[in-house]
Each structure stands twice: as structure tokens, then as C-alpha cells.
Amino acid sequence: MMKQGKWSGRDENKDAVRGEVWDLLDSGGHAMGPTWSHIPNFIGADQAAWHLAQTEEWKRAKTVKCNPDPPQIPLRLRALYEGKILYAPVPYLTREFPYLRIDPKKLIEKGVSFELAATSEGYMMHGERIGFEEVEPLDFCIVGSVAVSREGGRTGKGAGFADLETGIFRELGTIGPQTPMATTIHSSQLVPASKVFMMAHDSPLDFVATEQELIVTGNTAPRPKGVTWDFVQDDQFETIPFLRDLRDRMTAR
Image (cartoon, rainbow, N blue to C red; front, top):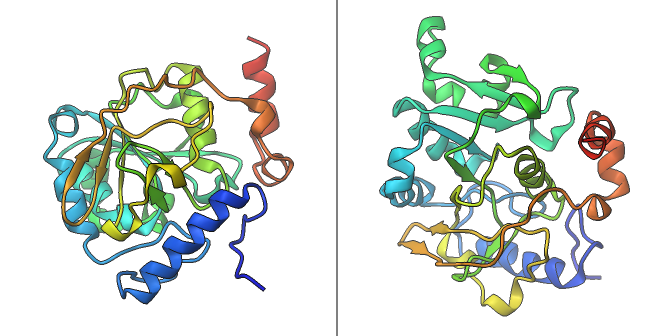
């Protein structure tokens, strides 16, 4: 029987490409920590972060949203050291509050190290608990990825959290059509465009940074305008406590 990821079964094509990438990371010795059912950490994550941080869009950004996974710790750390306000979600969105605001000035005042605050455990302890509507307009967005194409297609670990967050922020106007979307991956996570099946509610990537290079995708596909609630899974409503209330508030507008 073929090995399955935790969230497999929603899309067989995406399940297959995820499995290929996770196996390749393991067999190639590129992974740091577990791969299957994770946004995988990888050797060279710090170099990938460096490549992304050389973009003018990153340098100009005052507010940055980043996923909570280990391979993006170097980016969260850079954001804090560069004085940017960092927004990060509660892992798996399982708490009654979905987001944390991490202000480097407040961390300094409290004597909290940026190295601690850049981890999901650290920002959960020391970040300010907020709702989606309290996140200020974002200048730069980072999402975790499992498989990515040079053309800007991506798939995550299969749970749908990143697409859901991005859709909510687009609907609220927190993410605009020009807000850069970026990811950092190991070069072995790059796949042909034909293997990444982008749907209407998916947000294409503008930047893909690996340990070897920065890829500017030039993707001009239309960005989704908000949440496609029909695509939200029943199990997401069950496991994300605030999601039904948020949907009711947003659809009542």
C-alpha cells in the first residue's frame, strides 16, 4: 500500500507529487527533521532566506506575514532583526485566536531574544494574540510549500491552511493584488508546472527562493479576490474553532 500523508485523499494528483518530493528529500539527504505531512525543513534554508531577503520588495516591507514552519525560521529571524512587524498564524489554526503579532521593539523591551521569538513555540509565548481583522495591511507574504514550479504554482502539505489564510486576508483587503507572495524551498522541491495543479482559489507565487537561487516567476495569473467557502473542508470547520464565526461575519458583509 502506498504511503499516505496526513491530509491525503482530497486530490490524488497533489498527493502523488507531495509523496515524490518528500521521498526525494529523504533519499537525497536534504531534509532536516520529518518530511511526510510537513512543510519540510531542509539543509540550506538559511541560504534560501538570504536569497529572498535580497529583493527590493523584502527590503521595503515593514509588515511581513510568515507561516509557522521550521524551514522559515531564518526568514522570521531576519524580519525581526530588520525591525519588521511579523505576523504569524497559530500552527494549524487550532486555538480560539488565529494570529500572533510579533513586534521586535516589544521583544527588546521584554528581554526576549529574536532567536526564541522566531520559533513557533517562542512567538506563541511572546506574541500578541489577535484576530484576522486585526492584522494590518501586509507588505510581504511567505507561505510554506512542499512542491513548487518555476512558474509560481505551489502545493502545501495538503491541509489547506495557507490558501484559507490568504483568501481571508484578500477578502479583508489585508493582502492586495500587488502584495508579493513568496516561499523558500530546497531545489529538489522544484517540479514541472504540469505537476502543480493551480485552482481558481490558489494564489500563485511571485518569488521562489532555494539554497541555490532566487526565482522571479513573473506569474501574471489573476489573484483570487477572497475565500471560496465551497472549497473549505468539513474537517477544517471542525478543527478550526473560529472559522464558522468568521465565515458568518464575512458573508454577512
